[in-house]
Image (cartoon, rainbow, N blue to C red):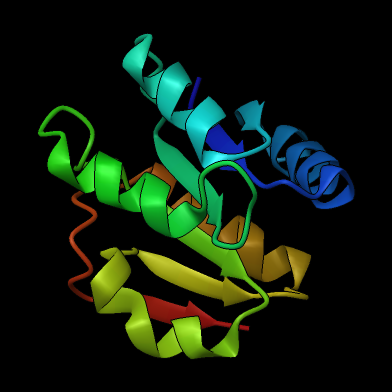
Amino acid sequence: MRTVLVVDDDVDIREAVQFVLEDAGYEVVCAGNGREALSALQDGLRPSLIVLDLMMPVMSGWEFREHVLRDPSLRAIPVVVVTGDPTAMHRADDLAAAAILCKPFDVSALIEVVGRFANAGGRSDGAGAVAAR
């Protein structure tokens, strides 16, 4: 089963994304901040995709992404950024994100983007990153 790691400090958004993705057939693991997510990855979790919020306490999505990109065993995991920060749309290369969804995002766009990158097993180096609304 394809596993998606959802990292968001907003419980309502995290649970909604979890529900939608589980309904679409994914196994979902959730973390409330970057530090929790990084710990899960360091403990051996290898999701097909990470859905990542940027603005979080403890460890932001930006900080989390820096750690992941420095780790050769983690950097190839595709990341879909979900953010309320419209300037992040122009900084996909900095994040090496496969895609960026601006909050509030359309559920069908989330499922489409997750399906495209979770099933691809490809790189997450920012090449060909897409922005969706």
